[in-house]
Length: 168
Image (cartoon, rainbow, N blue to C red; front, top):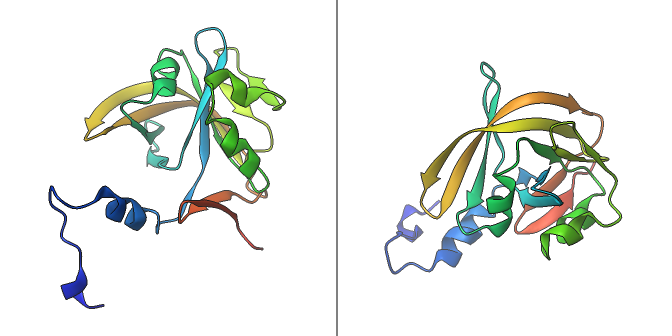
């Protein structure tokens, strides 16, 4: 590694360089969904992180101008579904109007309004614990209220701005 070729970040640096570098780190894909206030709404995150076992906390990062997040944050509970192998088609569903993404999807709704997607590798029923402003994003700490896992199911992975399935 020649450290002389590192790109120094300053106010004039094109943000696409930073975005391309971040894309080199593979991550899982999670759908965050709820009934908010009267129709299901969801968004995808690749910035899910476990935070604490006691209390049970996780975090997601959301763009501040996200209209979907503005609707979701009003919900009592949020469902987080870790997408699995074969669910790449679900990802495109959450790009149009918020209500359109759920047409034809098999979902479960908890009594508190968290929406969970079938065939995921794991599910979390969460409440918002805290929101922290961080640049052009908001870090959302989620308090996990209930969960279930299917570890035998392979995950969907996001790398180099594309969705991938792991080979077994």
